[in-house]
Image (tube, rainbow, N blue to C red):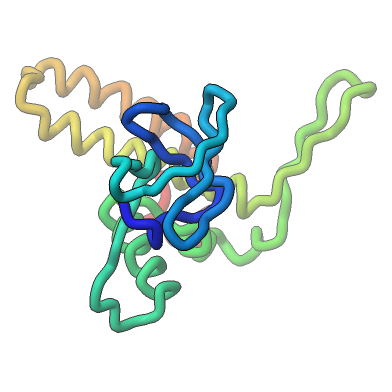
Length: 177
C-alpha cells in the first residue's frame, strides 16, 4: 500500500501486528495505533500494510465527483426498483399535500402521534411496490408448483384488499390497490 493512499483515522491491517488506526502520516512512515494498544511507526509499502475498508480508484473521470455519485446512486435505485420519496409524493392526491395522520390513544394520559401524510403515504406505496415485486418473484419462481403459486397469490390478493382503504390518498386511479 502506498503512503499516498493513507489518511488519518483510516483502519488498516498489518500482517504481523494486526489491525489498527492511522494516527499520523509523514513522508515515508505512518504511525499506527494497533488494537493491542501499541503505537508503531510503519512504512506502508514494504510492511504489507493493507486497508481494512472498501477502497476505490476512478481514473479518467471527466465529470464532477458529486455528479458521478448522484448518477451511480440513481442507477442503483432504479435497478433495485425503489422509488424516490419525491416521486412517490407526486402520486398523492393534491388535497392531502401538507396533511398529517393523527393517532389518538384511548388512554388520554398517552401522547398523540402525528405523522406527515407524505411520510405515511410513502410507506404505503413502498408496501404496494414490495408486494408487486413479491408477486413477480412468485410467478417467476422455477421450483414452485402452479398450485403453490396460486396459494401464495391468494395471500397477496388479500393483502392488496386490506390496503384498499388507502386508495383515497392516491391522485390517479391506476396507482391504487
